[in-house]
Length: 123
Ligand SMILES: *[C@@H]1O[C@H](CO)[C@@H](O)[C@H](O)[C@H]1NC(C)=O
Image (cartoon, rainbow, N blue to C red; front, top):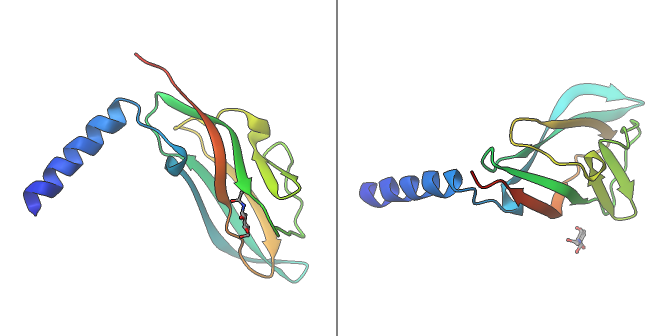
């Protein structure tokens, strides 16, 4: 078991180094800020591109079906367009930068990634 895990780890490290990258590497994390806004709970969201530094993800779209907020979200960071949200105006999310925004509603919302365009620079 330990050996299998060791090989799996080595494989994953190599896969990462070679720029394996997919939508699954886009991570949306959020936490309750503990603050209330107009009586609604505030949440802070961070979007990470967990691919290797050689890969960027652009035109990132999240499923925003039913998303509501009383806190204004800067559209250049998260533009709500019907049931879809466009992140960063469609500009690339690199592995070293985080995209952050806050919203406020009665419950947290699951922002599930729908699609992105992946570009890897081959060294
Ligand atoms: C978005 O989320 C809604 C509600 O959870 C779901 O019904 C729908 O299929 C999702 N759309 C996509 C494109 O994943």
